[in-house]
Amino acid sequence: MSPELQAGIIAAVVALVTAGITGFLTWQQIQRERTKWLYDIKTTLSVELYRKRMTEYAELSKLLLSLSSTQQKKLTIARADEIADEINQWMYGAGGMVASARTRNAGWALRDRLLRWKAGAQPKDIMEVRTLLMWSMRNDLDIASGRTEDTSADTLIQQLRDEMNRVEGGK
Image (cartoon, rainbow, N blue to C red):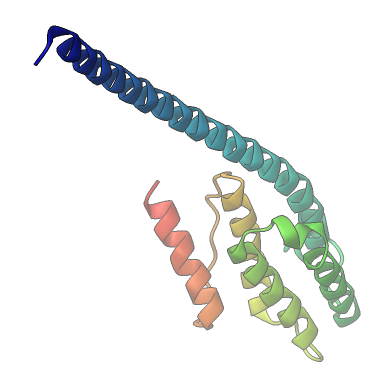
């Protein structure tokens, strides 16, 4: 083989290796930038979701004030229906869109219990579900809540209670 042919083959191999290494390094850089870009987007979305939840959960918390055990006015069936309607509006508005699935489920459960109360004394499960809804909102915002109350064996309530115990037990 002639020296010119050998030099040409060596130059071609060197060019291919250089192009391959350059292509690989460029691809790696693009992957790093893509990962950083996705991380930045997810972080921004998480911060915006957190801010929106703060606003919406504060609004729902004000609605729940009427259900507080320390409230001076006694809850009436008519007021319970009004609160249920307000919760329903909140759930179908921006609040329901940004709430976690757990918080939405607790909101629906509270609304349903308020609507089910038609006569007699206030059912105990209204306050239990309210407490779990408040806990769920606080948990979504990563705000510690040291307050729990006894809850019944209702499936949803038990599920929320078990989750609350699991989350708070892991902290």
